[in-house]
Image (cartoon, rainbow, N blue to C red; front, side):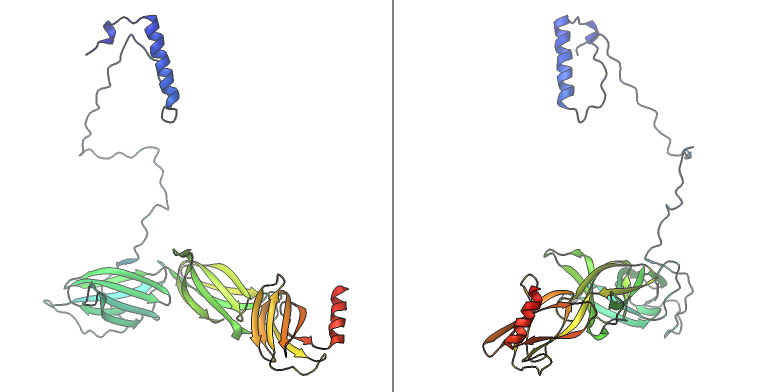
Length: 365
């Protein structure tokens, strides 16, 4: 082993070592934070290892320890409940020692602080092993509030549904009595629709679709439920949802992200900007509608919005400017019109040359 203390180093060699050290420090700036001066005369011995800690010594809290009042374990979603528990709809008369089956009592609540639910729950018990078809075997079901099951010893999957709020938990059954409490962390949305200016809206033509916030590999959202009518209440897990409201079947669509809070009912009213438009092809203003007419409604950019055939086609259109094209007996007639939110009306397309000239003059002016 080379003893640096007994070696004499020349000035040239010392300059070489110093230059090499500087080059090393420059080459790796990301990991070198601080360096000590290089000395060729003395080398300090490494620090001896500290004493081995005593595993039996009592722990001493640090004086500067910070206590976080929010740092506590959350209540498990599927936790043991206190016994005894008597279900509201019990069909079991009692238990004695030596039974070959176990008893499972189940309850659910919306939040940690809410009372147990007494209605609206659907319980399904599945065997953890699959059957010959590769599917989980449904063992038992129950509807209402709390529920009880008598099951053979083994592992099971407990599926709980409260509307569209769902949860699946695993439980192992022996020959004893178990009582479980499920915290759903769920809330609800009540949907409504209105016109933005306060006018009434035809509730029969309004629907809502509810989607999750994530996208699949095709870039599409997962639809949770569709074709929901105004006034409906959906029970959902606490989360944020993407809601699409449609007024009619064409282009009156409003999108919104709505948050569901646990234990709360969120009333969401979607404000639409649209109107119901009826088209008529007439020979003169206020005349009878001409049958066997084919229609195309174009947007201001020239794109086809909707097409139909008949004397009185009726659409709900979003606010904006449109052009109506009417084809009858080999001739095409056109008329530009505007949709004002909440103003349902008839739009007449006239066939007479005088009316067309008057309309063109109005547009040019």
